[in-house]
Length: 189
Image (cartoon, rainbow, N blue to C red):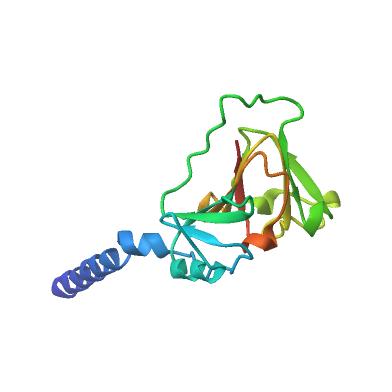
């Protein structure tokens, strides 16, 4: 009986070691990221502009996207492998009029809710629509920035991939950037 317990314990330790190697840093980078949706705008990778389909180089990896205006003034997505650091610009002033509004429909339509700088939501599943008939998890289609920026997270508890929208962008249809109905958590800054 003692030898069978020792053999079982040894087998469990070996299995844990194997799983630990399999779930190391490389696995952590790809955990849950899945296939990214193709945006309607160019993507910038390491400073070079590519066709929207180039985003699929990062399928299965946790990437961080930031919306910006390119040299021609048209929108593009900058791809980074480094997590965003939400910071407010020194010139921006937080006030009653500084907020981000999130909508269930395109073009700022449908049910909505607001958040102010410094606020975050770790689970959009906890944010009810009117009368609490539904929630906003994986149901945000457009965002309106009003003097504040936002980072949207694909998974609850700020799990990457991410999309950061700048404060001066105004209204954004997430379908243009491959993020329609994807966010599960967010941080406003």
